[in-house]
Length: 262
Image (cartoon, rainbow, N blue to C red; front, side, top):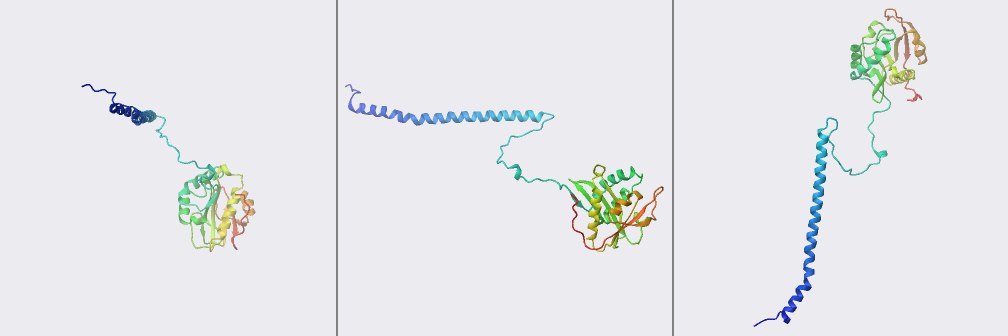
């Protein structure tokens, strides 16, 4: 017996399958498309990674360039709000033995070219900066020493030859050994500014009453203008050189800050 496919039951089943065919195919097609897109994206990323590795290897093999790595900035900071780590433009502080070499270089250039003699040798600079750093003062600009004064303690009314190499603590007198300014900073008034600050600093040191120094005749007006007074010819002498002894009285409290422009 032959069965017709056009019977009601099979026709309904066929119609149902045909009607549901598009609905059944649509999810499968979408999944395949997503997988293809995913593979393309992965291949593109792998290609970029290979290019980056090749660039890094080429840069690493260069004798001039150094390897670099691309980084994406997390955030952009306003340059005006960034903190700057810089040395102070101008600073006055006591010297330390670590400053001895810079001190001696400035001193040697300043005095050897004029008189052929240094007031202090490098060993004596180290000795005074080790024993009495509180009686020294350096002027630093952006971390570089541009001018300095070195002093030591003394216990007699007048300076003698022994005062050139000795420090006697616990006395009211300061012997100023040397004041020097770097050659690139001269004729700018730095010497007078540093001396003024040094004398005001000594006023704050408990127990100090006066400062003594010796200088050549052509420097006498400079120290007179700073407030020193002449005490007459000095007992200290160097061949072919004569000195005048000067004195500064350290009485009262420190004066108000002068408009020195620094």
